[in-house]
Image (cartoon, rainbow, N blue to C red; front, top):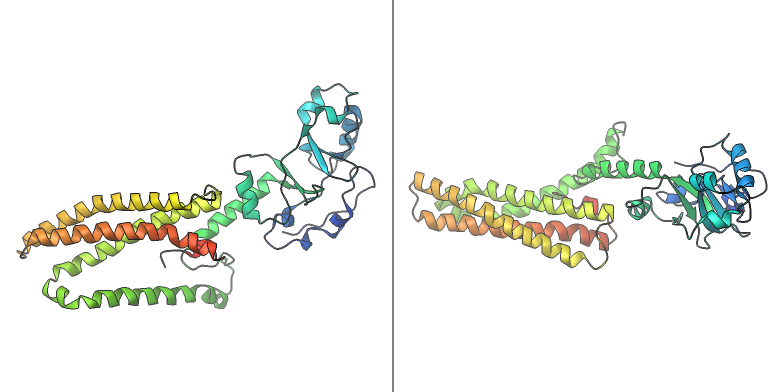
Length: 326
């Protein structure tokens, strides 16, 4: 979304000159692309009566949530709520009723980082300031949440190799270019898995019952890894994963993977024991033990991998959402 700031009359409501260039000068995907022009901008020495009179004019052209107080250099020094304007005496200056040191965002940060910053605040509107704390724009909270919904909806496709930019109207050739490389990668990993199984072909030929449990092992460990992956991606998206917490996250997922592996390993081992006895296989308890150990170990490893892969991709500067079952 690109919005160009309209020219306004000179005075307290006139934004800095660089605003006249509009939001297109900010990088794609940055918060600056979502900004709109601040209108309710006032000087700290203005009285409540003067501010209310000015607001009567401004509200004819825009919906106003907060009043923003800036100094002579257009730096944001405070925010005035409508409640304070309603209750304060008419001759009181804004600097006496404004909220000082207000929270603000910066225009060059990615929208995802902005969403993580405001996830616990839920303000209807956020001021946007540059490095000098000069007020350069406003962003509605609704717009951020809409962007968050779009980002989250795109993650499901990214996890299976569908590009975030692909839509129903995307040309088929472009869609093919987005999806096909991931399918080739998936085929490569499938060949690797088949090669590992091939190393034990002689054993499987002698104990065909083991082959019946291979899809069970692969499916269960894959699901365990996807659970770990989903939780890690959610934490990264919502900003729950703080610096220095990655080690704790991996340990937690390893513990959960190990516990889940033991529990499903017991069930799978019991299933092997029953199947081996039905088929009158030799050493049924030995086979059940093999399945138990294999299931436990594979769930443990896949759970750790599910947490490590997106963390590693983010550290390398790649999109963590591409860390999928593929």
